Image (cartoon, rainbow, N blue to C red; front, side, top):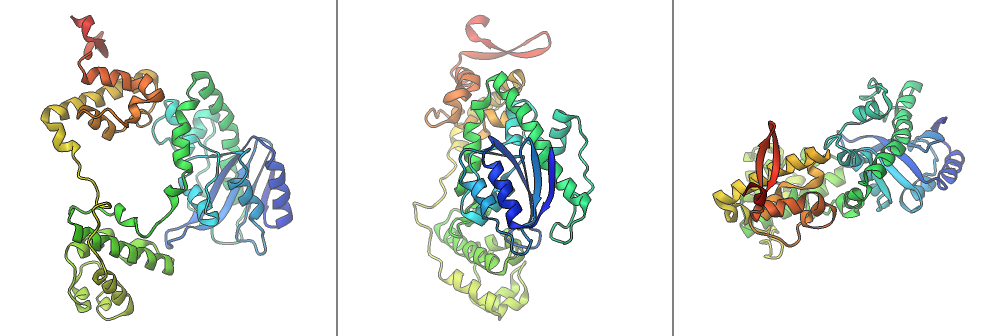
Length: 391
């Protein structure tokens, strides 16, 4: 494989992208810093196919990144391969308003091949290539320049290893017939809505026990204020105010700005400064949340009852048995919410009752809750048995 090293000029990057644009797949990784900022600071992009690899310096003066961005988000003929690519994809979305497509995530694919729910990159490399990854540069400050040769080699190795792993993984998926199992997961990962930080929706990420329209309306307004402050100052939202603080403000709103000095988690100076004034304006301007936006009550817990909860536990046991038998991660087969819904009597709209999930698990799950399937122990091993066989 030809390693180009660090690309810092537009012509070299454009030529590389022109060649990669004709390939069936490329592997992609990024290095970034985000500990002290709202927006992740992109410091390096690594890219490879099965013949060549390079690192691109987005901080290089005058570098035209457009050919690379076009390759990532507009070229539908090239598959983009990541490992645990959520944050890499977020960075591309922030730069372009689009996500890489089509894409393939080797961490997700590993779930279909019985390698766990979140296999790490180092373990993946060891599993497929028998190589121990050098972790020495993992805590590098990638924003500093110049980068030395070891740092660049370390970064490029991420995509060169991945370019060797991906064809092997694809071959296993074809042999097992499980490639189609991943389509839904990959499309979900590529959904731009997943990366859009809408200030009017960020309240949904804050844990709060109240369902009162007035409280949730204030939470929405305060969370929106915090998001805009964090974006404008390019600071992590937790540096503006932590989740528990804004939840407390929503439930126990201060009557006047001077009361902010008494709020745990806020600086006493907010009692008289501009940011405190903007917070108070958000609280005072809040309106009760509309019925169409209120989170639905969790009916499944009460509806399950004690017996239903036991049935849900049996379904979870069945899930573990089935996942073990076919060597697949339980998370890919079914989620706890779906099992509880099935136990409570729901049949419509459940992923486990359609497609490959129905064939591999949902059919047995349905038989279990409807009395056609039971558990037995044979030879010290837990098995599923048809009830007519028992009879």
